Length: 233
Ligand SMILES: *[C@@H]1O[C@H](CO)[C@@H](O)[C@H](O)[C@H]1NC(C)=O
Ligand SMILES: *[C@@H]1O[C@H](CO)[C@@H](O)[C@H](O)[C@H]1NC(C)=O
Image (cartoon, rainbow, N blue to C red; front, side):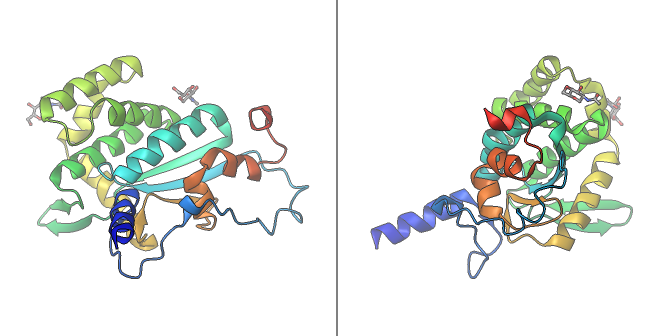
């Protein structure tokens, strides 16, 4: 009984699920990595870039953990071998009220605000790697649950260390741009309907969720042909 409670608690911390009832849950903590049955017949084909779509939300502990511990290190090591599309929306909803979009996020209004900051970074920087480094800095320095003053000062500090013009981010946040971006991410997310986040598509496929979430770097390396030197270390 005790273990069961512990498991349920652990479970709800690890993934932010919309419905824990009969969700299609990842079993990445079992560390069972499925064999890629196609690997042999495609082994001669060149594959030097992998596309990732990362569905996440900025206040979900599992999303933060994946971002900081898996995504950012993989992006730093693999460089141009990764093409990452961030989709910071998660289990939010969008409604339209006259000419404005209203969002409701799983972890409250603060999460919507931080999702917009991430979206604006992607939009303003026009370089996904750069945006990931900036967003990673923010997640590490000021969790979205921080008070506003602390959060603003982290934005300034990450702007300096990651060489981002913060004014552009504020302008995006200030106007309707950030809402338009979040609306579009919502549309993308609602097509896929992930039951939990983080949820990652690799080259358009949602297979191998367990190994992607468990070890992104190794999973990507496994799919690259020929293996770049960083994968052979
Ligand atoms: C994108 O940003 C990264 C990290 O700041 C940088 O190393 C890379 O050169 C940039 N790419 C382009 C095409 O500017
Ligand atoms: C944000 O909007 C306010 C009021 O509309 C304006 O005074 C301010 O200059 C704007 N800030 C930026 C960075 O665009």
